[in-house]
Image (tube, rainbow, N blue to C red; front, top):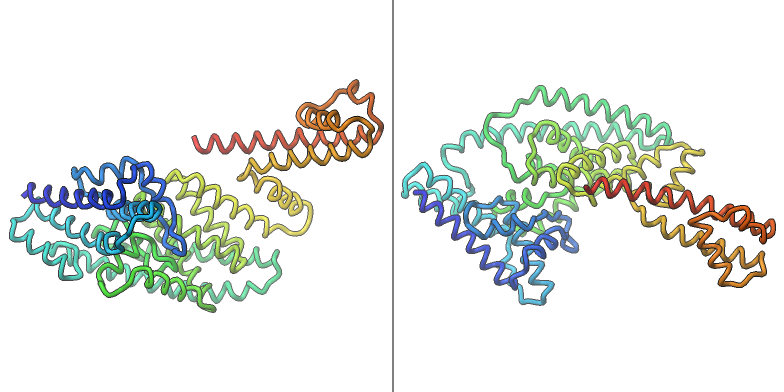
Length: 443
């Protein structure tokens, strides 16, 4: 029986190997890079595919996860498209590949404990019915499905009630709105804590490559969308995902959809032991919620909360670019909550100079602008040659001139040089600090 299971896994690995050959044999490094790209016009997030994972997928020693299969197929399709090869959409259909993976998983799992006839029956069941689980697990799976449905209904009702409360405070002036928003959010999180105490999940195992409330979110996650839709061969995957997203964005239900998604994501964040794939998917959900709260609804407290949750999950998956992206959006949301005054002015200056430290190399552009401005000003107020003025401006920016060096300049030129050296020193110092932060974070 073990040989039957191994043959099924090896055959699936050979199919992946053939797909890679069909796509022009892209290197594993290239596939890893392509797997991180999101298809143009698609809201379905890409799933990263490490080099070693792609290599293991075609060796046949063990069955890869569903997330790995989908990432592998997507990377091959992108490689074939980039190289100008004739692409047959059926060869890269994620629904078909997911069904093949589910069929192989059933054969693998059943072969370890049951006879050949049972294995064949289970394989036929996968091909012809909606179930991809052994019969012995159907009861526990049904119990878990009932639990998820009940909890989803509770979350959706809470989301509708919560959205009405939030809608009432959106008309308030910004300072008071942020205060009331923080109070409402804290109360909603307290209610979630009570909800988690009341709803105890059944002992049946939950799926490890999709989110529990994937159907609740405004954006179908990559693996969750395939698992939910692959059971109906007449449903077009892309069309179904876009239909769900457009429905979630129809006013006035858009705010309800995002707030319900936030509550569902928070339940999932608190109540589940998340796998790597689930952390990636949930981080994408939190980031989309936070961005929409910031840009579309101007709910800055909610935006900061969702984006900070995304940062936590991205840190656990070592996605440093995504951490910076969410960190910058969170800082801009925090800026929106500041009242007019000095703090808000300083915050605006930091955003303009270096995006709150998340874009340190932008400061080099400001440094070059300072040198050009001081050089032009010196050229106007002095009679020295252009080359000497340029040299003086550059040297003074990085190494301030001494009193003896300033003796040959007039009062106006001295003021220009002192101002340039002060701003240059401050700019270089901030650049070193922010760049060091980036280096330490990556390491």
